[in-house]
Amino acid sequence: MHPDTVTSIPLFASLSRRGRKDLARLADEVDVPAGYRLTSQGGYAREFFVVVSGSAEVTRDGAPVGTVAPGDFFGEVGLLGPRWERTATVVATTPMRLLVFARKEFREFLDTLPGIAAPIVRAAAERA
Image (cartoon, helix red, strand yellow):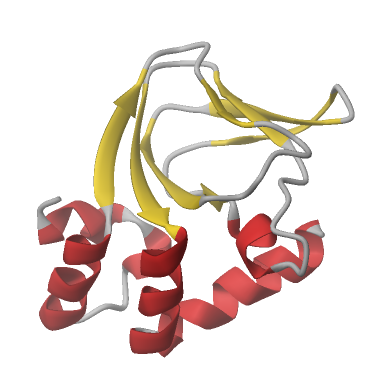
């Protein structure tokens, strides 16, 4: 991933150039088609996602609870919670480009970029 990819994402807006470079080495940039299931409620949490482009529907117990769009993130609840379990299903409604952090890389960026940790932890507490 190119470090400048993150400049348009509010979560990463405050990062220095060095911080963007550090983040870039931890993330994979992935494209998925419309209809692609990104997470399944009750499934094992393996990654954290940040939406670069496109949108997805979020459902819980089969009922829509929201959408994610460019700049949004999801997957943190399962990675920060005690059970490592997905709390919602997320399915792409359009083609999407995502930054994807595996569990180890997610933990590493929380440790090395503490300014980013606070909004992620707040979101996890609200969504759990």
